[in-house]
Length: 316
Ligand SMILES: [Zn+2]
Image 1 (cartoon, rainbow, N blue to C red):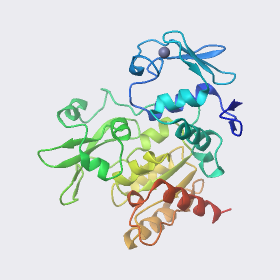
Image 2 (spheres, rainbow, N blue to C red):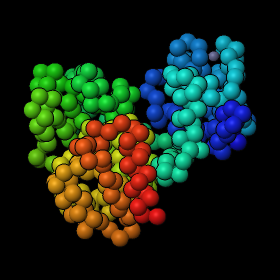
Image 3 (spheres, protein in one colour):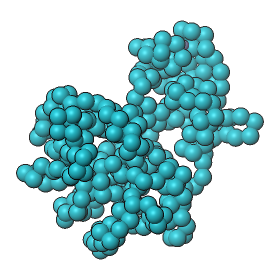
Image 4 (tube, rainbow, N blue to C red):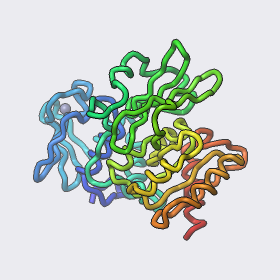
């Protein structure tokens, strides 16, 4: 049990919390993590801008209290988490409660043991040279307009091609091979997919590698990454769903699927088709968006939490 303050405690394993932190931060912190019997020893998030190569900060498994032998920093677990997230203590506390002790609505989303990152790096069978991504920019303010953070964009290697004014989303097949760069014009909103390759489900490889059994499904990549941004494992069809994609889904680790397609006739038709073709072992749950909202990307985190909560209530 880790006490967050006089009032709140979470029943979580320090090593798991740190693993989850490593999933969500891409600020270079927690580079080195060693699991010892009494402590998790990590790169100290307090000194040297958190960029220490080798761990010197001991986080006690029993209660999360940390002590760094490099800089002498010590204190409660909440402060350690805040330093990793570059946040206030209050935010760190709510993050911990939400992810490890919070309301039931987020329970099914909690990560398992080991965090496996998306498989970037050259692999046999890649259709696309990963180096192609390097020629593009890693950030453009347009991404912030679409509510995406630099962390999430870096995590999923979203890129921007200033010449063609397109946002680029690397798409992997279920085996984790980079097979397609989905491109979307920021002016015309036109979406370009490589016609020569069978369209995978965006981010499904990542859901699979982590063994998530609950996920949300959307149409477009911006909605998908908004899902991740708000803490929900999410996949995207990249437009109309193909039979091959449905097959991938039916063979995946997913058992509960939140349908969060666009709030229009096309979106409702996608949902109906998918429900018809979805294997019996997968439970589909409709997420109803507020009337005036077009898609997930239009929602704040609070609005999405509320929509998911309501959709869960409708089935129980
Ligand atoms: Zn330190």
